[in-house]
Amino acid sequence: MDELTNWLDSCPKILKIVFALPALDIIWAVYRLCKSISKKNTLGIVLAVLCIFLCPTILWIVDLITTITSGKVLWID
Image (cartoon, rainbow, N blue to C red; front, side, top):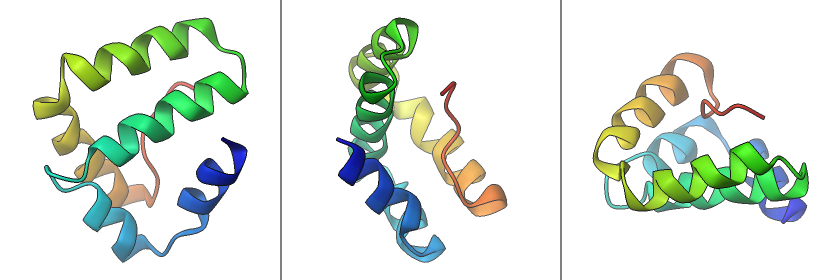
């Protein structure tokens, strides 16, 4: 899991923006889940699972904006 999060962190900004598009935003949802699991953050795990199933329609907009402005995805970890 650390390999996935490290790889996504080291990707170029344009690839991160492509991953934030609506059809591919599941990649960032899995990234959040893996990051929380590797840090053993229970709240993060629960929120990541909820984000996967309940709010992918809103979260891709947030991911796209934060990726464009800061180059990374917004998360609590």
